[in-house]
Amino acid sequence: MKPIWIVDDDQSIRFVLEKALLRENLPTRSFTNQRDVLSALDASNEENSPRVLVSDIRMPGGSGLDLLGKVKEKFPALPVIIMTAYSDLDSAVSAFQGGAFEYLPKPFDVPKAVELIRRAVEESQREEVSEEQLAETPEMLGQAPAMQDVFRAIGRLSQSNVTVMITGESGSGKELVARALHKHSPRANGPFVAINTAAIPKDLLESELFGHERGAFTGAQTMRRGRFEQADGGTLFLDEIGDMPFDLQTRLLRVLSDGHFYRVGGHNAVKTNVRVIAATHQNLEQRVKDGAFREDLFHRLNVIRLRLPALRERREDIPMLVRHFLQQSARQLGVEAKRISEVALTWLGNFAFPGNVRQLENICHWLTVMTPAQLIEAKDLPPEVGATSSAIAQSQTIEHSSQEPLPVAVPVAAAPLVDAPASQSQAGVENWEIGLEADAVALLASGRNDIWSELTRRFEARLILAALAATRGRRIEAAQKLGIGRNTITRKIQELGLE
Image (cartoon, rainbow, N blue to C red):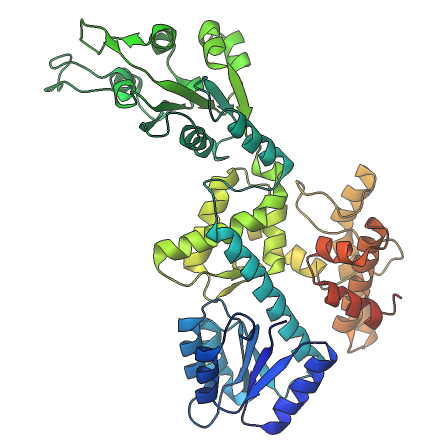
């Protein structure tokens, strides 16, 4: 394993951290000044480069802030923890905003310092995996079974020119699927032309699709080729086909039947060789029953139907998509990519995303611009996601005092950690905060001064026991479900006496 690099001119600090990390099986390498660190970084390779850098803020020969800036230039993804005395908190805030993973006030509690370093190690490992995946990022991402079915369908259609109908909610990525179908088809060298039939006024849509001759209408000063001609030899993607005006549906049907059409105001038939891929978020069968969509056109388009799942149906893909979009936004803005905490990631994973992948992409762009620190926390999430973030924050630090398992506060669209009758689960989500407040009031009235630690301990115990029950005692799987490291859950089990 890569070592933790410790930079401090105080021998006692280095000694304490070295021994504490050694007990946790974390290798270390120590330095007394930034000059030696920078020389070692220049000479390091993949095996002996640091996993995490822990540096004091005040040292001879240069400050930790100077070192932070130089390290981030060469290794932007390396987590850096800045150690500082309480009088240096202003500098620590500057360091945090400058890209530090976290700051560690002196004098520090050794177990808390080790836990912070462990979090940085886990973050570093996740970022490495994320970077490896992003380095080979295809045009579409998804590990969920529903997305794998879509990928398999694209593969089967790769050598076909058959018409495809893509269905799915708005923002779910229908155009990405259409582009993938084109890219992996025999027409890949031809043009890919997309048009949203719902976004163009009815009076202009016919001209957009089929073109017009000079003088066909007021303002038509020159002949114009339509999208069907522009896509000749390639693929034409008709998005939101369910909103196409009824009279234009007849013209579209004729083109699909024999490949011929007339420009607006034209008298000579134009021949085109186009593969049509259509998409809609509407129920076309119902549109046919309502008389708003031609049944013969529906059957002509519905040769192969490809259903794209909503993002809430593929929640396991959200972490991968978040990191991808954060990297993408950072490249577009020319800034360092933000990291995201497990709590914030859990919140995003539980959000319903009515706008699907497009909404997630927009949120990641918003976070890249608006989050002041490099690490995105739950409090940084936009209002539509974080409106009830206080409930999640409480659910991660406190526990109801009753003997029943603690219900977890999640949005309605998310599933509870442990299966329970619907009425019981709903009642728990509604009532656990009330019970928490009552317990807190009672403890405050008793004069105790350890309320935070007591409620936190009880919450963590209940949460770990619930996860272990759900995984039949398998600790690694329980840790994965909880979004923590396996070493963390082992340590917590020991500390809480759950053995």
